[in-house]
Amino acid sequence: MAFLSRNKQDNISEDTNMSTEAFDTTILELLASRICHDIISPVGAVHNGVEFLQEMGPDAGEEAIELLAHSASMASAKLLAFRMAYGAGGRDPNIKPEDVHKAFSDLITADGKITQDWDPHANLGFEERPDAFCKLLMGTLMLAQECLPKGGNVTVRAGGANEVQVVATATDTLVRPQVEDALALKLDPNDLDPRLVHPFAIGLLAKNYQYGLSISENSQTQVVFSLRYP
Image (cartoon, rainbow, N blue to C red; front, side, top):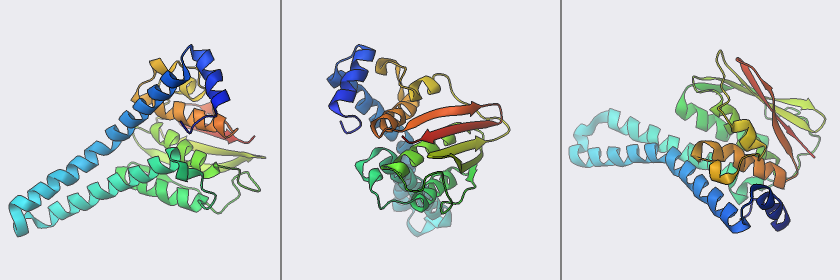
C-alpha cells in the first residue's frame, strides 16, 4: 500500500496488534466503501436520467437534462477530490493551491451548502511548498467540509512558519465522535467505519509525508485544522 513505508507500517501494526497485511486490507476496504458510498448517489441519478431520456425521448424536457448535468458534475467533482486526496497523482509537484481551490469549489458547489473564502495565491505559511502539500491540503479541506453538516464557510490561512490552517466556520460546527482519535491514528483499524476512514487515511498520509495534522481549535462555531511541516 502506498500510504506508508514498510517500517512505518510495522510500527503502526505493532501499536494496533495487527499484521501489516490485515492493516492494509482494512484501510483499502474502508476507503473503497467510502468512495463508493459518496459517488453512488450522483452516478445512480445519471443512470436514472438516461433511462428516463430513453423512455421519453424529446418529451423528457430540459428538467431531465439539468438533472443529468448536475449529477454528472457532482460525480466528477467527488472523483477529482478523492483522486487528489488519496491517489498517487495528488503528490504531483505541478499541482498548485489554485488547483486545490478549483477542485474544492467544484465539490462544495455540487452540495450547495458550503462556501470557501481564501486566496490560493496568498502566502499559506510556506516559502516553498513541501512534498505532497496540495494533497494534504485537499484532504484537510475535506475534513473541514465534514464539520459543516448544516453548511458554513471554509477558509485557509497561514498559521505561522511552516504551518497552514484550514478553518470551518458556522453557527453550529460539528466534529463527530472519534474523528480526532482517527486523525491521530489512535484507533484500531478494526474499529473504523467508512465515516472515520477519511480522517484516519489523511492522518496516515500526513505521517507518511512527515507532516503534523491536528485540530487546534474546536468550538461551537469554529473548527481549526493545523497542518505543519515538518
